Structures are given as structure tokens and as C-alpha cells.
Amino acid sequence: MSSEIVIPLSILVAYLLGSVSFGILVAKSQGVDIRSEGSGNPGVSNVLRVLGYRSGAAVLVGDGVKGAAAAWIGAALWSPEFGYVTLLAAVVGHAFPIWHGLKGGKSVATAIGGFMYLAPAVGLALGVLWLGIVVVWKRASVASLVVMTLVVPALWFIDRTNAELAWAVAIAVFVLVRHASNIKRLLSSSEQLVTR
Image: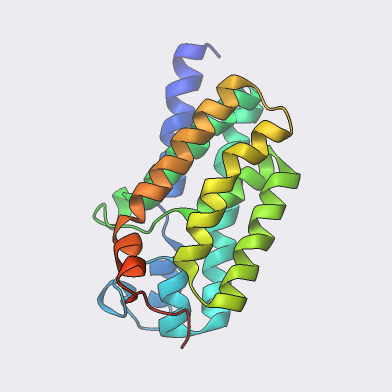
């Protein structure tokens, strides 16, 4: 199959995969519209607040797996560098899901899941760090900002290619920009804790 077909098709499939919102689906299975509860965000942290740790864990795993699957699509069908491109497509899909009116989450779990596939040591370390910060400080936004700030230096440290680093920068910046409202609330000391 030629690159003219593989590349755009892979990006489209990764975006559609990313558009599957486990936050919305898990909450809906319990009769809850997560977009009308708590912060209204269908991501892991809001599901944790509204529905508790079991539901939050299900969303965390689901969103992480779809990120890993999207990265695998690009890496397996084309090249390791292209895995970062399809991961970015899934990250965008999670934030702007076509299946859910383009109103999605902030893509942290999806991004970390993809990094776990593309750079297992880095992805696993970031995932553990994220969980550790959430458990200790109970602020998912702080955990997300920290790991997205560290991901590119960590990939550079393990000698990833310039192309991989460039796409990782795009992913990290996208996720950080999605947290603009959280940053404002952190600065004003009004950010919510991850508690039920």
C-alpha cells in the first residue's frame, strides 16, 4: 500500500480512535452525563471526583490504551517517528471528539499511553510520576503539567531522533495549552482537588 494511502488513513483512524471518550462512556454506563457534572470535563480527574476511583481507573486505562493503540498504528504501518504523528492525531481526537460534539478532555492519559508504547521507560516513568503527584497532592492538573513539561527532556535524554522530539513537543504543547484554565485556577488557588 502506498504512502499516499497509508499516511492519511492512519491519521484518520488514530483520530477516530482518540475520539472514543471513555469518560463519557463509563459515566453513561452508570446513568451519568459527566459533561454536566463537576467541572464538566469528560477526563479522568472529573470522573474521579464525580464517580470515584474505580470509574476513574477504568477511564485512565481506556484512554491510555487508545493512545498506545494509535501510536502502534503509525509505528507499525510506517515508522517509529510516524507513531508520534498518529499519537498526536489521537490526542487531538480526545480533545475534539467527532463522536461527542467535539467536546472532549485534555488528553493527558491518551498522551501518556502513547508514550508508553513509543518509549516504554519514559512513558512508564511519566505514568508513575503522574499517579504519585495525584495521590500525594490530589491535583491532577499539577501532575499533568509536570509530566508534559518533562516528556521532551526525557525523550532527548534517551536519544530519540529530532523528528520524534519535534512531534513530542507538538503533543506536549497541545496538552499544556488545553490546561490553560487549570493554570489560571492554580494561580488563584481555586483549583479543585481530586477527591470524591
